[in-house]
Amino acid sequence: MSDVAQGGATVFPLLNLALRPEKGSAAFWMNLHSSGSGNYLTRHAACPVLQGSKWGEYMDILLDIPIT
Picture 1 (tube, rainbow, N blue to C red):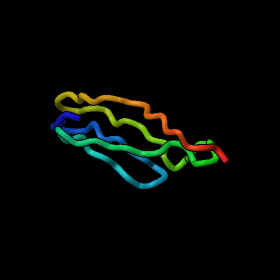
Picture 2: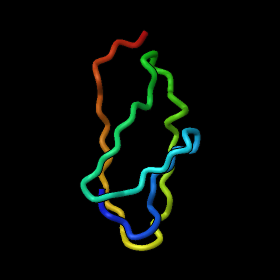
Picture 3: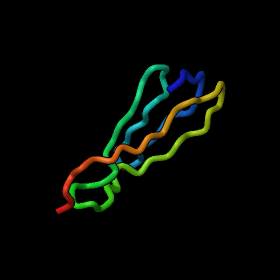
């Protein structure tokens, strides 16, 4: 992530949580339950950057977890 002067948070409305971008930080969450079904609590959205710019990287991590 990069520092953002204003705006740019990633929000999780169902968890009442907002992650503000900060240089050198990272966020990680599991989108799926062990059954393979989606975890709706992890639905998220990006707020617009009001001042400055936001840089980040998105990565899928595949785990070898058996689906039950």
